[in-house]
Length: 484
Ligand SMILES: Cc1cc2nc3c(=O)[nH]c(=O)nc-3n(C[C@H](O)[C@H](O)[C@H](O)COP(=O)(O)OP(=O)(O)OC[C@H]3O[C@@H](n4cnc5c(N)ncnc54)[C@H](O)[C@@H]3O)c2cc1C
Image (cartoon, rainbow, N blue to C red; front, side, top):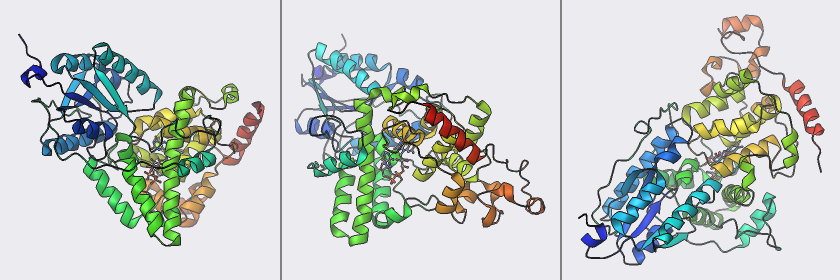
């Protein structure tokens, strides 16, 4: 007869710690609490084949996750334990874990996305029906969606008052990784990368690799070199002026409590300018929690407009334009540079995300949901709440109180990439174009185009739409929707 692991361990019933978007040992509440209880721990990661088949096709994020899992395995091994990786349908895997280990409890850190919540409810039921205790913990955010509410207990739908309340609440402190992690005898299982999951990685130069160590290294670099200039550098896509922590935050390879504590220390310690810069950075981390809260309280945003009157808006379905946008071949240099950065690195600068999203919705008049889906398939930091929030902001259908905002890509380029360095990095066809034409190469005299071997319409496309006329059409469309 097969003996369960708990029988093999002399009847001691372990606690299962289910890792999900928290692939680290530092300041991991579920792990720390399980270890603190004194019980043996089963650190579990489920490679949910059913879930994976529904995920976007590009494999870059799977490779990032694989790097994070390998580091997690190593971190656990160094503390005396083993990470248990099991592949299969998520519920079946949990059933097999219950059968094989007869755990006393399941611990995990909460996820606020609608689909994750539905899955988690099913798994909780499974364990509880088997008489197993379940404890869940706050981890991914400083304050959960139900902790930041208006005085009459309602969710905020405007950022500034949300942020003001957020800043007044006492923030939890980070806790150190456990020194030892005692697991029963486990056989680890293989870390799945894109290839083993049958995915191809189209992103050729991913912006982030690895897990907890890589995250910490980048974070320390940013604290030393980036934070004090963040407010000035954050809008210039040609420089390394933002933290690039988003892929690590997505997989939880860094603790947001650790980040906020470090930022608050910088606010207190810096001179007035450095402190203002660090404050600006804190605001961005609060934006992240704001959109988590919006998604939590209004899960309908995943399928439609937050401002429901926009459901009546008739977007265009021009696949030629959509393909040109995806490939970075619209003939609008800044937009093309942004899309190519996304396709090559799996990340795009925030200013550029706003520019390309505005271009798709306001210039090409294409539904933001198509852009959101494309971003989700490519971004290493793809996050339903931030992605949806960003797209609805750009499309003027979201929680932003100033809806009619149309970005002029040429003016954005002149302002934020004045020398065209960013454009030239990602659009090599335009490498030799003089700066005076870099934002509108189609205006170069014919002879110059020939001399530079950059004939517009051949080497690089002419703009697929005229911004002024497209914006005028969008304004009419916008006005045709009833605004309460
Ligand atoms: C159309 C669109 C789609 C987006 N999709 C995503 C997405 O899928 N995942 C994602 O993490 N961010 C998304 N963003 C927000 C933002 O662009 C990225 O968080 C940021 O560019 C990540 O780079 P960074 O880590 O260097 O940011 P930094 O400027 O260094 O900011 C630090 C952190 O703050 C958070 N943050 C910053 N800006 C925002 C914001 N506007 N909304 C929410 N959180 C923010 C992120 O966690 C980020 O890592 C999107 C924005 C737009 C306009």
